[in-house]
Amino acid sequence: MVSHVRGGCAAIQGLIKVAGMSHMTSGNETAEPPVQEVAAKKPHPQKCVVAGVCAALVLACVAIYGQTLSHEFVNYDDTLYVTKNVQVQAGLNLNSIVWAFVTEEAHYFHPLTWMSHMLDCSLYGMHPWGHHLTNLLFHAAASVLLFLALRLLTGALWPSAAVAALFAVHPLHVESVAWVAERKDVLSAFFWMLALGAYGQYARRGGAGRYAAVAAAFVLGLMSKPMMVTLPFVLLLLDYWPLERVDRTAAFGVMARSVSRLALEKAPLFLITALSCVSTFMMQAHVVNMAFGRKIPLVARCANAVVVYALYLAKTAWPSGLAVHYPHPIARPAWMVAGAALFLAVITLFCLRHARRHPYLIVGWFWYLGTLVPVIELVQAGDFSHADRYTYIPLIGVFIMVAWGVADLSAKWHVPERAVAAVSVVLLVMLGVCAGVQTGYWRDSRTLFNHAITVGQGSSLAYNNLGALAMDQKRYDEAQACLAKALELDAGSIDALYNLGLIAMDQGRYEEAKAFLTRALDLNAGNVKALNNLGVCLIYQGRFEEAQHYLQKALEIDPHHISAMENLGGVLAQLGRKAEADDYIKRAAELKRSPAGRRN
Image: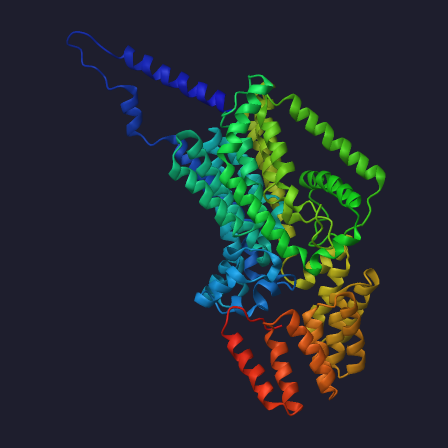
């Protein structure tokens, strides 16, 4: 606890002063230099320890994630962010930067993430190792910054190092680092840690400039991933402990007034949070990504959230059966929900009971509970129940509880420091080995999704992506088998229907292709890719007027879809409407040079 550290420092300073006085002499005796001056001439040993911890964190990250430099891209969102995104592949330039700020691709406002991918393409082209290297560097930097920020905030060296080490090596964090598309996680975490350090400086020394540094880190983090919205709430927790800006010995009413004053201090940050939440919801609300959520009643979503809160803790303690995708069960058994709720309630009551004597418990627990709120799927955005990547920031709260709890218990029970250190190192090595194994499953799409199926997390998405991979490699029989399995698990899988339509088109079975694409449109009439490819299918059949109808509809939904525009130009040319055809072809060419254009 910071109060213990401060007391220790004061005691040491007092001893130094006493030591200095004892060396003062009278008469003709030569006075020895004060202890402070002698100490100042020698390098502070703790600085060497801090540098050693930072180096160890970086080496641990390299040892686990260095293997990703030989990994491929995967066909799950890497296509969206890099491999099939021509704007990103164009590299970092004025047009692409404008696009990053105006695009609704991925349905999030995170221009900094887009620009980081663009910079990778400028530096490394389409070589996967460079894109993985950037993720590794940001994760290592975030781990080091977390250690430095916690040490600044608490004054405690080894508990801060333990939290940072757990953050660096825990297997639940593999998904955020080994997956190129999750650049937004490691990038936003980097700014999160910067914000923590900046807030520590502001809380102790004040100043508009230091507050502006916190706000700047916060905004940059939001421009990387909207999940940063919970940062102001975490800063309020830090005011309670370790910054001690709230008097924990005071009556509840006095504490409430202090918290209100500190919350008002963060009003600009809360305003930024509100704007980001509104922006994110608006971008998500009108896409098919939210359609699955409408199938799940609010009560079922709440039940799933309760279970998932407990499930993440179980996976933290025993990280097995990890997968890229966890299909949503729709309904959770009542006994499971009740058990999870009781488990969470017991922990909450325990932390509240010890909120004054051991404040790190309530801070860590509320950190975990609060930072998970944006991704606990109360607003269902996808067909999964939870995801490992969502624990990237929230688990820091749990790690704080563990690190400071072990430090307190070992002191209370007089456990030798070397024994605590030895056990800690063994546990960290075990977690690191597990993380290394888990990272290996991300080497390519086939390994990734086959592993998900092996650990019992087979889903429509897993089989669809395996089918898409086989389709790209012209292994059509294998692709059709995988896609049929995807439809068996989810008859409403638009992606599986769309991919089966593409296979039929590639094989010249246009009527069959039309049937699959029409079924996909029945499920989502606004699927521009299906509309465009249905138009292409009709073009191959020489049914140009029907093709024109679907292509025009695609452009009504997405006026910047280049492929649909080019295809419509070709159709109009076949229908003898040359002037209109030339106009569409010209507009398509202009869009290719514009940040607004979309190829597919």
